[in-house]
Image (cartoon, rainbow, N blue to C red):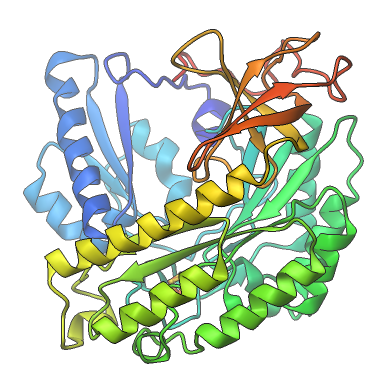
Length: 443
Ligand code: SF4
């Protein structure tokens, strides 16, 4: 988007208005593939009824099914793989389809960029690719070997984003905890977080990283998070399972007892930390006993947030070759059972928060009514965790992008309700003038 705007093009979220339609796709698992294909077909209709004269398909689906897209979706005019992003302008301006992937792509601080998120938070990709061999995962095949962005490049981008009014930065990558290893930097993520925490800003700031690999979490990293107030007390650590046998077949290793000790160490080092994880149920060979191990583990671990995913058999993954597949009904039953256990844990954890005062980042007016505003505690990551609803604004009405004090008054299974308590907000609202190139229409 940044490259197109820099070149003078205007972006729109309204496909009926667009002359060129770009569908950015995912192909991680079947539902993502299906959603991508459905969107391509839906967008192709605009070539008949709207102003569109070109349909470009970008992203992971292209890496995986480049030839099939070309032959089976004739309404698609061009495809753009994940390593070819520099060619987006030429394709939109009419260049004929070229030859395919070039060097592995990773953007840097000088790459023009437009935030697709609301202006008060942003994601920064600090690394691309992955060297882990998880047998269910196809990402390394399409994203390549792990490579980190340069330290100074990430700092420069974060400094610029904070300067533009962003309050919260979320560092992402397929494996953030390996950050810097390929550059020969020891404890690279801890060092990066410490430097980011020291960026001077005229407003409070939150910094977190997502998607860490459990056995890459060092004590230095935990100490660094505990030390700096700007570093959010939040660990997102997909564990995928707790049974040693399943984890071995997943080619991830480790076991539930090791994870419990790690959780204990994380909680002891970072008081008030919220821990998020995700699990896969129905992996080939997962027996009833394995699932019991997982259930017992989830009960004991008392995660603040838990995502449960049904195993998806992808034809290019190593686990596709494994025997003892679990049937769909069993997978669904196990998923529901784990989610209902977590719902009870989450509700109890939320109830324990009633009466506490916390900082919240104001997200905006609720879609349902003008009487509610949405906000997030720092321990609620954007787009994935629950949120807070503010129903009492005190003396100073909220404004999007402010960090405010809120007293928690009610608790639901995943969301919280609260009242603002600060009459003098500690942070100004975002400036009225938009610091980013303006999108023609907003979502
Ligand atoms: S660490 Fe994550 S991205 Fe890497 S192979 Fe495992 S699941 Fe895939």
